[in-house]
Image (tube, rainbow, N blue to C red):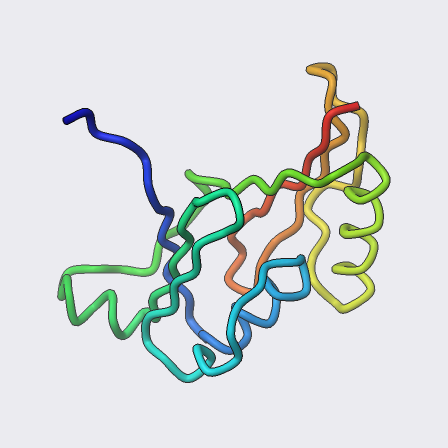
Length: 128
């Protein structure tokens, strides 16, 4: 059997704050997961996203340390360039850090980047 990408996991310092951010960006995440140390959803296209608290990460790996810098970005495909702009504006209006405002990327997409509560970068994009 071939190995396939199946899930991305994100370690968060505050589960409720992180899930509030991802709900606002448009993911459907049940409210009862706010108080859990592990939260997981499957998106409409079959991709799984999971969030683990720092405490859970440390319980699994006692040597785990809070990362510094950005090495992996989660990219969410929007329905249109206008949705990229509107989602970015909505998130910034709610107080989240806009890392890079919407722009027309040379590779043919409308693109924007916003930071979640832990500073992880979230890419928003749509074909032009």
